[in-house]
Amino acid sequence: MLEDHLVVPFATTVLGVEVTVKKVDLIGDNIVAICARGRDRQRIDLLDLPLPAPPPDGSVWIDAYRYWAGR
Image (cartoon, rainbow, N blue to C red):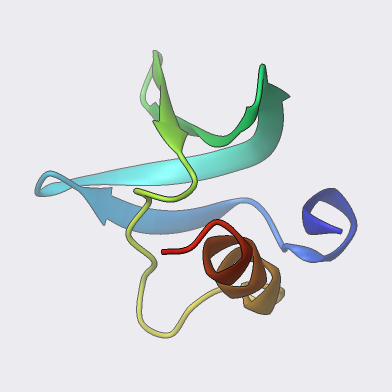
């Protein structure tokens, strides 16, 4: 559902640095956001990803995943 409904890319701030979420991916048992800043890339667990205000279209699926995961 995330891949089909979450509109990427979108910008957010991680540890005070603006990054672009390029896509979401399944790594093992975790769903991660692939974040980019320039040439650098970093995986951020979707449960830990801060969402911008206003959140991107389809972010209700992130909320649903967080609810399901108990966060």
